[in-house]
Length: 198
Image 1: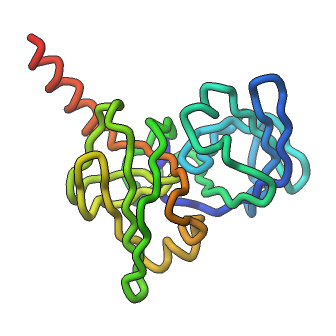
Image 2: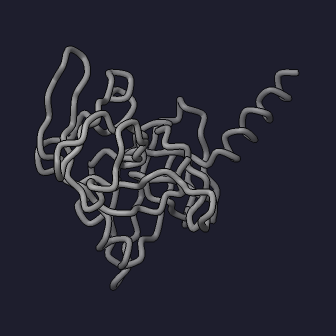
């Protein structure tokens, strides 16, 4: 379980294809604190640390993960948002995030609003997910508040701190981002559809 509060950014140092899987070698500021078998969210996608390599570590993304996330777009030098799992003796500053990417979205527009940034993202309607104004959404592992909610689109307002200290500043229109919709909203949607069938 995560909070969507990015702890640091890491850099993809190497990629190694192994059949349908990809091993990623990543460096980050807290590598020395990691342990084998630890869960770390990478752009919101939970991956397990499988090897420690000095100031770098290795994680493996299987084909299913590559199909559902933007990890297949990573290359050497890609900046990745990182968060270690939630400690239950701490504050929940973001919202409850599972680290399970629901689908990817496409950045439609980025608007500079004199210091803050307004980003609009579209997503596939086939997933039956939804957003609501002032609801929560996770974009590339970042817990954000929905500013505007449209038909299979939503917009978020990014404060300068988030823009500077995450990979948001690297985004361009057309980029693919990982999306995890609010867990409570997903349960409500499923229950409403179940009741409609009955």
